Amino acid sequence: MKTILSLTGALLLSVSTLGQGFLKTSGQRIVNEKGENVLLRGMGLGGWMLQEGYMLKVYRQGQQHKIRERLEKLIGAEKTAEFYDAWLANHATRADVDALKSWGFNSVRLPMHYNLYDTEKGFALTDSLLAWCKANSMYLILDLHAAPGGQGNDLNISDRDGSQPSLWESEAHQRATVSFWRKVAARYKDEPWIAAYDIINEPNFGFEDPVNDKNGIKEKKNAPLRKLMMEITHAIREVDPHHIVIIEGNGWGNNYNGVLPPWDNNMVLSFHKYWNYNDENSIAHILRYREQYNIPVWLGETGENSNVWFTNAIRLLESHNIGWAWWPLKKIGINNPLEVPSNPEYQQVTAYWNDSAKASRPSAETAYRGVMALARATNFASNAVHRDVIDAMIRQPADPSARPFKPNNIRPGAVLQAADYDLGSNGFAYYDTDTANYRVSDPKHTGGNRGGAYRNDGVDIRQEGTGYYVTDIETGEWLQYTLNVAAKGKYTIRLQVAADSLPGKLAVTVNGVVKEVTVPAGPWQWVAVKNVALKKGSQALRVKALAGGYRLREIRFEE
Image 1 (cartoon, helix red, strand yellow):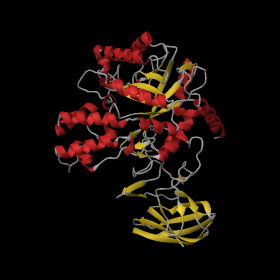
Image 2: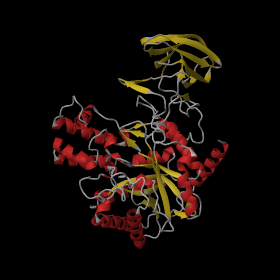
Image 3: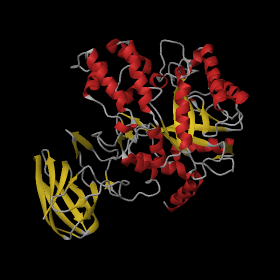
Image 4: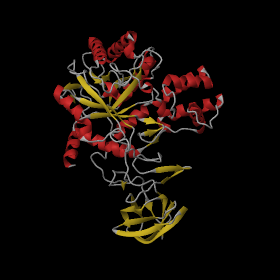
């Protein structure tokens, strides 16, 4: 840990030198024009220019064009266009970028949909985003997320129509992609706050065996991918000698067979990392490429997991001087810095689209109100800020210690919500036995917050009305609360608990004193821990499961 903390501190110093001209590569590092190391800590704006169904809780036909088609059938073309205008206007604003800067991020990755750039619309949006980034001294990475025709057989991520020729099956689409990048590079060639061009996001196409290896995971040659990326690079260099070009391998950015060696002296190799272990082996192949070809590497996309996974991944990456861009900044869901709130009328739309057995077609008026409310809710002002996610990404890789989630000012009558346990890493602020989703490394290991509500640690939290409770508590797990006690004294601590068929047992520990209490089987009820000595000021209260199987909702303090 000491080595990691020292290295992280050194890398943090390098981040403070942002703004020193164009970024470029120097051996295995990304540097500014002074030659100082720059570690990119970024966030991807997934869902803004390109919707992916899962972000909107649409699980069937989740490509953006399919969502749009179905919406037009519900509310008509004119109101659908109104919805998309509102979506683009609200989903990414100056407030989002300001917040990212204040939290400690230094870069933004923009997933672009090529069809927005057929007119000035896409460039106007990009220009605004660039201005916000420049005002915050943050770098912007331009990422072609939806290429003409679609770059793979994972249809949602590139808004691909699988009934039409893909990018790889159409010379016209390939020419359009090359032309797109020449136009983008010509426009931004003199912009030093543009960090790089990420030229094709997550290619996933089986060139040699399209039936048995449709996503190109086992591809050995990748000749069409290398050819097109070389053509794109050549087109960029015709107009822009400055900017870094980022390349991605097949198989969602990880299969570099036949793609290397690099063909440009200002190039970065990107990889993507999801749902696997955060150990040296998980990035060994990328480190080998970096060493073999003397090229910087960058984790261009990762996320969609628990805070434990986030902290461990960032700690691993930064110990190897690998920058990163997380995915995404916001969506409907808890495992991102910002959560977009849904609404009941929109939920009627998704139930209908997802073929819920009991769902009927919503009226045009209901659907319109629901989707417009959702578009407005994508605005930063309406987003829920998940401080636990931000803390896990920015602070905890170097400092895992516990900090208060809320002030927890304790006097007689004070109430703590069980879900408001401290911020901090597993084993420091709480302890949970099943903390992250590692299904790629182990299909049986799919842990995390099973309740899917409120916070993104391994702790299982469910929503009940407007409140929350901790559930699925297993033997040995514990929660810690930093208390700020107004006056020294003896308190009775009452815990609101429930258990199913078997009783549970918990221990309350504070100031070195442990007191145990049984949780009777049955619905919500209060159990009391009496004569608990609290000193004035700050101290930690820990609630540990000696026998699990119960739920915990509130903690009350009485004299």
